[in-house]
Length: 290
Figure 1 (cartoon, one colour):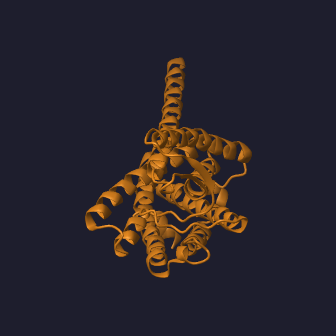
Figure 2: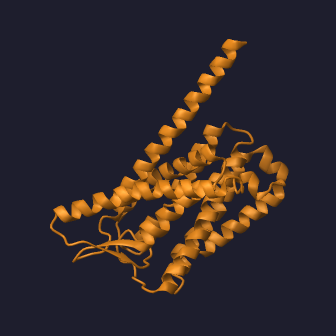
Figure 3: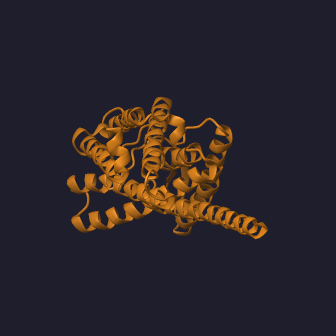
């Protein structure tokens, strides 16, 4: 099996992804663990971590080989959290300003909800639910960052350029998130037209986030910066810290997430292009010296 993966790594990644998304879709649409007391579709995440472990054993790799390295751990976590704090502070501010201009009274609330495109998620208050939410979000970022930015990126690099690996894992990450609008389509919450529009939007937004976290991996040499930013986006800005008006909860969540992700993506892209430019200049200088 190791030979088959190394012989055609891109096909291997597509096969692994196919298995993972089938489990993901089955849990979200058929089992619906997010509608139980757990409040989260976590089975596919645990399954994904086991798949990473299994593939690493086949290839003879260690977890550190795909980015789970202890080097600069605290610095990487801090970098990711700082990026998230700055971008979401701006995003929340814009969201609150827009709602105030519309005449709403605004409050911030800390409680757990499951993410829903239709705004029909159940509210759960209490420290126990918050702890469970944090725990499952940690599992989520370990699986998703370990799979897409770690395992898939490293496998594709066996035979393809780093840029190809970066964009392929981002595309797969975008497709991974189409399960959410598909869930709503099957439940009758949205129509086919809305499903197509939301599906395309999800692929673009999640794909962009995949590129950003992939670049963070390449900038730091570690998955932990991306994991910290990813955790803040999912756990804090989506599940825990909510904007309340007299009529609704988080009616502009998509605007909040979009602003934060566009801002942080632009910042990471600028840092990456600057790093590439400096490297090219150093190469030119070394050639000139020769």
